[in-house]
Image (cartoon, rainbow, N blue to C red):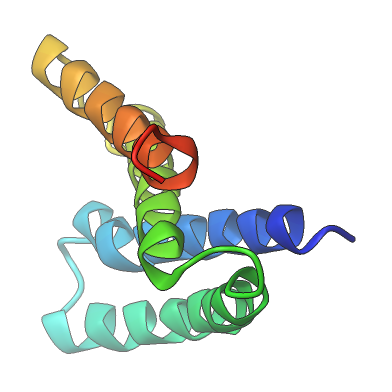
Length: 115
């Protein structure tokens, strides 16, 4: 498989796990903090199992900065979906503009005019 595509898929999966690890506990406010911390760490283990190889494979074709910006795009996309469908929080215009700016940042990092 193409290293760029494989890296992107691994980073996308990693971002999905990360968003769940960081924000799912907001739905379980009845649990003690120590339990949600342990649960988040357990989920984050799988995030690292995807993120580390994603960055290692991706570094064959992308710089570390490019990988970080690509991962940020995936993290924000995963967060928006999670926020809308799990947390039931609305998307507003400011969030949409901010997400659009991240998409522009990814374009600049990966294919922009100053390369």
